[in-house]
Image (cartoon, rainbow, N blue to C red; front, side, top):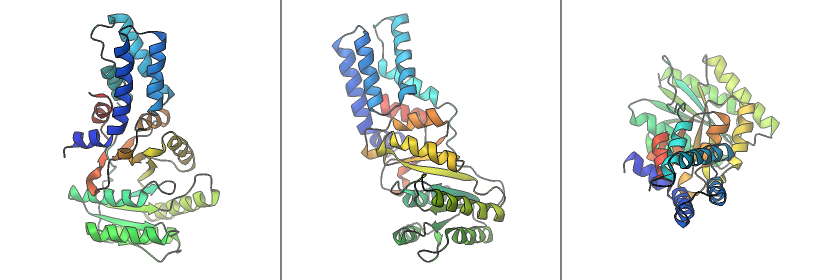
Length: 303
């Protein structure tokens, strides 16, 4: 399956809901009235595109209607162009330091898919011919350590782990030592799920980052927040609060294939200005894809 096909399949529910609604509104009457504009606004907000992006699209629709009338006016093309424009500064590429391993810390609340995402990122860099290690730093959940080890065996990636309940920062320390010794290109650190409101857990994350920063200058080089696309605008609050607690370098949005709330990717990027690095569009290792604004906008709004 090609990349665009993956985007299209993954965003099918959001696309169906959006295009159906917009077509229904505009085919009912060729005239753009205050009522139909309001309905378009509702449809965009229902797909979790957020107030700012919705206002931008509605303003562009209004302007196009006022300047060229209703003849040949393509509302979906206007929405697509506005979304592409809003992502013009989005740098999706995973950072790579010039010497030594690039350390990537994977953070987020429970249940967003951090462990699976860490493994899929390892698979991605491996497919590019780069070497990688995984660190099982979610020591709160015995199942997380086992899950990462299973992924490691499946992908033939070494997993640095310790016993359940051990100190996460010391596991991270051992993982950086191993990554340096093996001259790995990347080290992905799977951290424990934590609520941004739990002060002690956020302190532990600070400690983990401090420990690896002392060991390797500039590490972690990326701090990526994994958010669950199916939670819609709740994910925006998580991203906002996490970004206050630990400086994030980007976002990974998972589980977009099962939701009609795919627009939240746009809302979060618009509000926080953080790059969307990857989106998860399925269960398989290669279903985590680098974010592509053009293909994302097309998958949402192309007929």
